[in-house]
Structure formats: C-alpha cells, structure tokens
Figure 1 (spheres, rainbow over the protein chains, first blue to last red):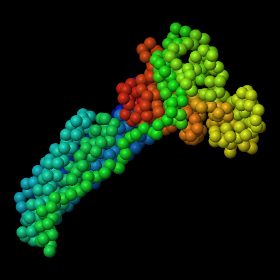
Figure 2 (cartoon, helix red, strand yellow; figure 1 turned 45 degrees about the horizontal axis):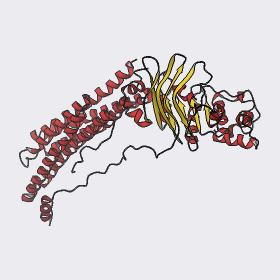
Figure 3 (cartoon, rainbow over the protein chains, first blue to last red; figure 1 turned 90 degrees about the vertical axis):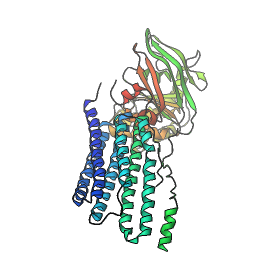
Figure 4 (tube, rainbow over the protein chains, first blue to last red; figure 1 turned 60 degrees about the horizontal axis):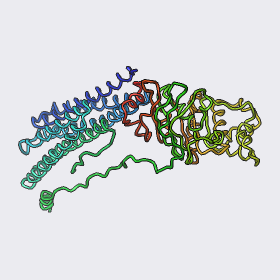
Length: 221
Length: 285
C-alpha cells in the first residue's frame, strides 16, 4: 500500500526547502559581490529579495504543520518534517545575515575600501560550499557527509580570527578606518554565523538519518 | 587608553565557552517490575498456528500497547494473558505465560482465579442488563465478597472517572448510559475485583473521539496502581498512551510474530525494523 498524496506532499516540502536554500545561497554570494564591487543597486536588490526568502519559509512551515495535523506522520516521515521545520528557520536566518551584509555593502558603497577583500570572500566561499554540501547530504540522507561538513566550520572560524585581527591592526594604525573596519568585522561575523547555521543543518541531517539529536560542532564564537 | 585596549583585544584569543546541550539524552522511564510475561509463546487453533515464539514482558505501572495489522495475532496474544482463549475449540499453547512466578497454563491453575487477577475490557462495551451499581458489584458478589458492596462500587466508579456522572442514578439500568460511559463502567467492573493487570482489547474502537480521550486519560491515571496492556489499531492512540509498544506481523504462513518491542517514543520515531517503519507510516498492512 502506498500513500500517494502524502508522499507527494512530503516531497513538496523538501523541494520547497531546497528552493529556499538556493535563494539563500545566491543571496550570500551576491552580498559579497555587492561589497567587493561597491554595487549599491545589487545590495538594494538583495535586501528586497530577502522578503521572498522569509515568505518561502512561512509557506513551507504552513505546509509542514498541515501535514502533521492531517496525516499523523511517524518514524522517518515525522523526522523528515521535523528536520525541514528546523532547517527552514536556519535558512531564513542565513538569508538575514546575507541581507545584513548587503546593508553594510550599501553603507560602504561610496567609501574607499580599507583593504583589498581576500579573506572575506574566502569565508563566503567556504560557507557556500558547506551549505551546498549539507543540502547534498540532506538529499542523499548521508550522515557521514553531514559530519564531514561540520568539521569545515573550523576553517571559517580560523578565517574569521584572521580578518578580526587584521582589521584591528588597521584600526590601531589609522583610527579613520575604525568605522569601515567595524562594518567589515560585522560582515565576517555574519559569514561565521552562516557557517555555524550550516552545522545546525547538518545536525538535522544526522537526526533525519539516524534518529538522534547530536551536537556536531561547537563553534568557538 | 582606547589604543591600549584595542591592542589587548588584538593579542588575546577570544574564549567562548561551548554551548551546553539543553536536551537530556533520551532515557528509559524509571525501572518497573515485570508482573506478567509471555515466554516463547506459540498458539495453535487446531492445525492453524496463530502465534509463533512470542515473548513479551508486561511491566507494573506501565502501559504496554500491542499494535500490528489485522490478523497478526494481537487479540490472541492479549487473551492468552488471562486464558480467555481456553474455550476455543482446538486451542493449544507451547511456551509459557508467567504471572506471579508461575505458568498460568500449568496443570492445576484455576483460570477463574487468573481472570480475577488479570481483568479484561473488550472492544464493545458489554454491561450486563442490570443497574449501574449491580454491574460494578457483580465481580465482587460472585467472588463471595461479604463486605459493604456500596463502598466497592463507589471506589471503582471513582477510579474509572465515572462516579460524578452516575452517583445520582446508581440504580438505573446500565444500558441507558452513553457508549463512552458504558465502557468506563466496564472498566469500573474490572477494577472492582482489584486485579493486578488490566487487559484492554481495542477499548475505544466503538467510541467517539471525546469518549476515547476520556478513556485514555483514565488509563494514564490507572497506571498509578495497575499494569495495562492494550491492543489497538489506532497507532496515534498507542503513541499517546503507551510507555512501551510491541509490534506484531503476520509471517508468510499467517502465524503472528513479534517483530519489535521497545519504548513507544523510539518505536514511533526511530523504529529498528523496516517492517515497523512501513507499517506505522502507512505504507504496508
């Protein structure tokens, strides 16, 4: 016996979650692009698009609640819905971090950069790679991959450390850079938080596959 | 000053304590004693094997649910715990059902005494066509109780959460009660003879959702004093009320087998057997 309608709805919430994830992934990449290129128009666009990410989260959440209320899901079906419910919240927050970076990009668009951006784009690259990998782990129900991805969070933390110290040095040498540097520390902080949220996502993948909630990587920050 | 402070910050590694886990690991409820136990129990009705090698512990002050698709032997198993199958032609067993240190199927064990200690509530409420009071007192009366029956009636009706609804009409015919009230009356009747274990064979299948929830609340109250075994087709009910769940399946030769038994929250969120997963998610059975 199969539950055709239920299985379709279950597939749909996972599809919706992946669509939201791709919107978030794009927002992160574009926010760093806007910062690097001092592109105010792009920054405004990212800020406007965040509403769509939030909307997607609530839409998926509503579908999940409806499924729980009407289909009484159990076992792996229940774990899937619970995992999706958690992940869409983490994705929404990642979108908010990208929006925050876009706002900073907008503020800094008409000011000269403190320094060429090297480590911040690297942080973004690692964070996006982690996000993509965690979604792959979700799709393939691969707990091993999820655990591996969590370990990459240390790379982001180390880069954050580096950016933080470097910018402090700039501020010490030239107090006129304090405002711009502080903004950049916020950008690096946003990226560090994004990577941290990805580890939450990985924890949900492990829960989905193995049925146990496990804290995989405790961020230093 | 600010420069010095900034330099200080630049030199020190940020130290942030790792977040503590809020959630405690999932753990089993406090230990409970086994009050009845099926050990390698097999049952036949003539040539047909209805149960094969089933083992199940019934723990005191806990609810154990038996779930599984139709025909998998759930009712046969629960009825073995108080020898309700004895009168079915061709019925025979292998293995044991232990209660208070002895096999209830051993030679010389009185099935009536077993049923006094292990009471039963059936699928359909089956009050006798007598007054409410006489229904509850019936068991005590036939067991030769000579004390004050009205005290027994009140205690049992209170335990069954029915007293407030019927205290002013104890002499009315029990058949005038609603289905849910009749079922609680049958529970009161079972409680009146102070059993150790209460067996419930789909006790809510004939009841509406409100009456069902009242019975479920009652079951949670009753486990302060009794062990309960419930057979149910309603998996949500098992998930709501049971501490432990046992899953049965029919083998290819149609004999019932126990495929999984454990803490209800484990069985319903992360079952170990693929057949349990398929059954409880509605993809099988």
